[in-house]
Length: 226
DNA sequence: GTCCAGGGTTCGT
DNA sequence: ACGAACCATGGA
Image 1 (cartoon, rainbow, N blue to C red):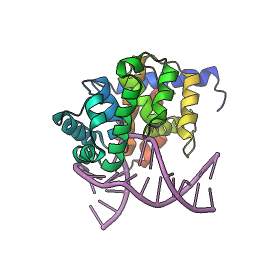
Image 2 (image 1 turned 30 degrees about the vertical axis):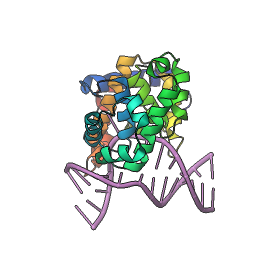
Image 3 (image 1 turned 120 degrees about the vertical axis):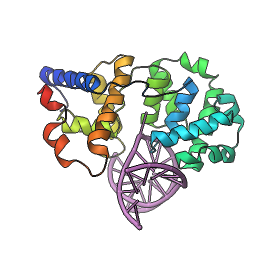
Image 4 (image 1 turned 135 degrees about the vertical axis):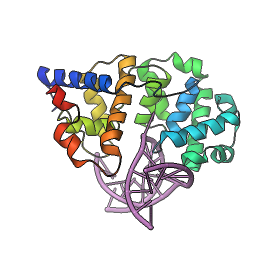
């Protein structure tokens, strides 16, 4: 699997195209500002988007949805507003680290000047921003090309027989590295692909009871590709 | 009551 | 380096 041949590469590209075409999405990551994308990326960690959205609206109502205002708020205050998103004490600290990190970087305008790699490295330094959250912020907040090799993506690639990332903390990085070298995506396609992968995963494998047959037997879209 | 959701950190081995 | 516990709410 380390060296995918031209045929495998073509199959991967076709599979991605099929997913995008089959799951068209509109406004997959609704947000009114770049900062709101970043806040949402933290709040949605291990949480349904509906609950993260409720927390975002509470922050908006409290006029805390700007870096300067949030950076001056207390963790306790933030925790109170974001309660619907769960893990509020943890996420309050992460939001605070995010807002302070932005301020200390010279603001969003300065951050947006950084190259892709430098920006990603900067985001990863901040408490509460891991690889997946950083890539989501890059892709939807800063419009930089990125493949989100999250759980849905890794399961899809595994069941398609394209790449087996395995388990553990490094699975994300292994999958990301593989995709980066095998596939070149522009921002629009990368955004659409991630949304499609998640929708596909939720529809066929995320809900209980799990469908044992469909993805394993048909790969859902694989039969139209193979 | 139980399981899980668009993760990351921390703490045992 | 790897696995597991932990966070904490709302929905099915």
